[in-house]
Each structure stands twice: as C-alpha cells, then as structure tokens.
Length: 361
Ligand code: BMA
Image (cartoon, rainbow, N blue to C red; front, side, top):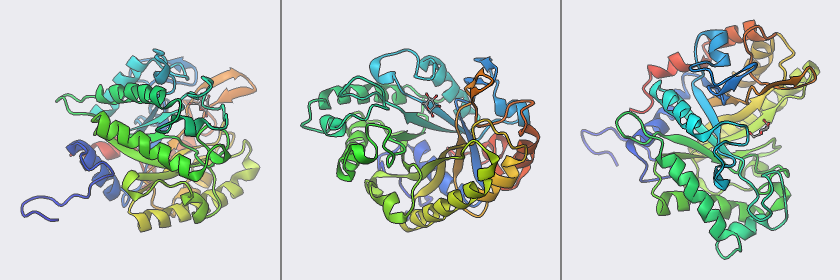
C-alpha cells in the first residue's frame, strides 16, 4: 500500500521490525545494484598475530578501510559463559558491534549453539535432538531459556539514540550438512523448518525482539530443489545464502569458480523468485596460498552475480607453521597486494562505500 507522502517500504519477515531494521532491509536490496559488500568474521576482535587492539582490523591494516559487514558468533552465550567458543568476550563483542554500527556497517551473528540434548557441542549430531527442542519435546523448556539469553543479547544492542541495532541473525547454518545437530540427516526437513520457525517466532512474538533480519543458509548444494528442501517459507526469511570453502590448494581454483558460480546462479534465481536478499554467508580459502586469488579466482566467481555480501571467515592465526586458520589477508600476507586490487574493484564495497549510503535511514 502506498500512502501519499510516505516512502513505500517493503517489510521484512518481522512485520513489527524497527524502522532501522526496515531501512536496512530495503537498503540491502537497493545496494544489490551497486556491488557486493565484503565482510569478515571477528574482524575487530583479533587478526593474525594480534588480539583486542582498539580499532585494529586485518582488513584495515591491508587496505586502510574496514569491511562493510562484520560477523560475530554467539556460541556459548546459551550456557552463560562470558566468552564465546572462539574466545571473544561477549561484552567486548557488544562494543565491537556498536562501533561497527556507528560507522554504518552491517552486523551478522551466527550461533554454533551447543547440543541441548547431550550438552555437547554444536558438532554433536545426536539423533532426536531437534525433536527434543520443539514444543512437546523434553528439551523445549531448556531451549527457551537459551533463546531468552539470545533475546537479552539482541535487546542490549543499542545505538547512540537508544535505537536497537539491526542484526542479520543466521542460526542453524549449513543446514544441509551432517555435522551439526540441526543439519542434514540428523533431522527431517520438516523438523528443521519447525525449529527455524519456533526460534524466530519465540524471539519476535514472545520476547519482542524486532531488530533482526533472518538468514537461511545451506552448505554446498547441487540443485534448487536441494537448496529449498529445508526452506522454512518466505514469511520467515529475509536473506538467503550458502557457505563455501575452497580446498587448500590452488589447483582447485577452476573448480571453485565453477561450483561457486553455479550455486550463485541458483541462489540468484531463488532470490528473484522469492524476493529475498542473496548473500555468500561464509567463504574462504584457508591460508590464501595464491598471490592472485582475490581477483583471479574469487572475484571471477562472484562478479557475474548480484550478491549482497560475502563474509570471509575468521583470522584465527597460526598455531604452528602447519596449523593455521585465516581467510582474509593480513599485512605482509602473500595475497595482500592482490586484496588491495580486489578492494579497488568497482564490484566490491567496503566500509567507506557503505557509510555514505546510510543503510539505517
Ligand atoms: C569453524 C572454525 C572453528 C570455530 C567455529 C565457530 O569454522 O573457525 O575454529 O570455532 O568455526 O566459529
């Protein structure tokens, strides 16, 4: 409905979303025509060789600019730990989120929540776990207490004027893989849909959390039918995406372009048909042992498609020469110069590009 004198806005899944959340939703759609925002998990918390240095970021060290999207992770919030499973204290995380929002960046939160049935980690795929947390299940009450903590976290994210900071919430990710208790063969598609719907309606309708956009995301998939098999429905989802990692060698560059490209083509078409925001919700090539990977492989894979953002996974650093985890370059890293070319590409958007767009207005 267009009301004279008002800008017609599409509404996200949460029809009572705050005005900043509605603005973000609409601006993300508009921004699809401008390029792909670069995102990085835990960007402000640590990088390769450093931790908790105010305002530092590996991306900023390399390009002089911050990412446009900042990912953080809620795992262990549910069990009252002060620090998440990747050793980021939740109070620090909240202040990083406020900083990112003040700069006009976009925030997305994942949640590797423990297995509520066994008390083990998210990677414990005990049969029956999803059924146990649904209404009527033995762990439904426990699960609700976990959602209460997520709600309290979300409602504690406030901007300078007291407004709630919008977040793209991405629970139950990689949901077609078998490694998480909510994934693949560990539950039926119907159970997963119910889990997603229950979680969302509890946060929104019971806890009055209205600063969330909801992301649905799979791992690798081979057809549109597979992608949508566990889809909870258009009324529950704002962002659609998938996670993809390149195998640890450059011989697979060609395959990466091919498979990432074919999944992005499917994602594009699902996004158009369902009026959703397509995103590469996680990606990476651990170790980045190809000096030209950013422009010759990654940009080639994504350039033909409209993708809201692409979130590189975390720069956890080196345990020793053979054991490391980083998906974005740091100063001096082999692919750092090429990353600057990637940064300069018209196709990519970083903090300075999106700050001027005022995504929350
Ligand atoms: C994985 C790895 C782990 C991390 C987990 C949750 O991909 O990065 O080191 O604990 O994600 O963030």
